Length: 431
Image 1 (cartoon, rainbow, N blue to C red):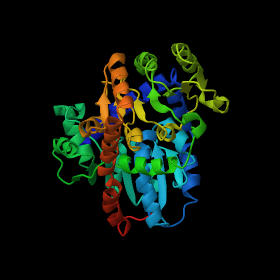
Image 2: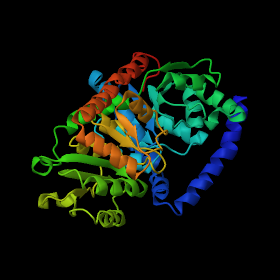
Image 3: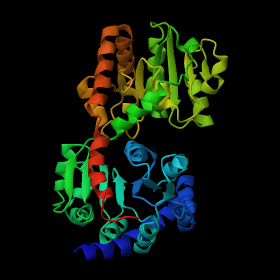
Image 4: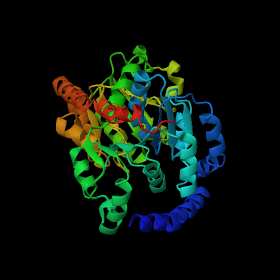
């Protein structure tokens, strides 16, 4: 039956995906960039791997930047324990590839080729991994089947599978039985994920709930971020700071009127808005929305700060550091397609607020259950929640402690992943 699925996937699905990607590339710059980046993939990869030293070689694959963040604590600890370790990191998305090209712990950074049998074989001929680690969900069938045919140990770390996933539908489930059944270790975030994977009827795979390495990564990153002070003491002194992280216009339709309401009764507020996409158009729209405040200031002009109530961040990559200065955080995306990373705020021991669309990951619900986060549905409710937390020091401190405790209780997944990787590094397939 696996041969049937392999033929069907390769003959029908792959050509269809190729056509769709190239059509999308005509209108979407990001897709076009990913296609162009693969033109010289094998030539570039060959040059890179030829410079690698002898020793065990672990290949990590992530769809994009967010998934690669989950691999970083594993890579860091591997490198610490085994300085001779060679790390190859691949990406499907150009955003992950572009943002990680200078990641210092990876010896090779590359795109993953399009998933044809020929490309899978050629890619593995060059990479020759001792172990292959897929992060989260980006599992490509021909790659997986080629790894299995070469007896290369393969695992999925931080694996998730919702009980409502379409992959569990009857016919599609049989295809995934043969796909995931070709993976040796499936290390899931939770026991619920384990139960979902068992629906595929896997026999030879190890299924184990080991937690989520994102908790380890956010703790490590926050420790470094605390050493930086992007908001000077002269700006935040005596202020109650609210950071709005990764906001979309849909979030701002709720945040702005709530802030305009509470500023009437709460003095010394400082609102720091970090748009998810700080385009010039978006920044100007935000400035218009806050017309009722005592002026706004862009982060790039912070040295000119003169008491403005709202700082609009016009750069990227600094949100985690800004959360360190917050008394309360609102995490965006939750009035759009799904909430962004709530752990980056919770790790600092502050209350976290977000909107109704937060079921795209497990952490928001867990944080709410722990008492460290609150779901808001409109501007009036947001204003009430902010007022309560800003006027009741005890309530804010308790919620913050619950948020930090939730993060700390869930650390340790990195060590559990390493317990599965390390036995493969002492024998078996070597580069």
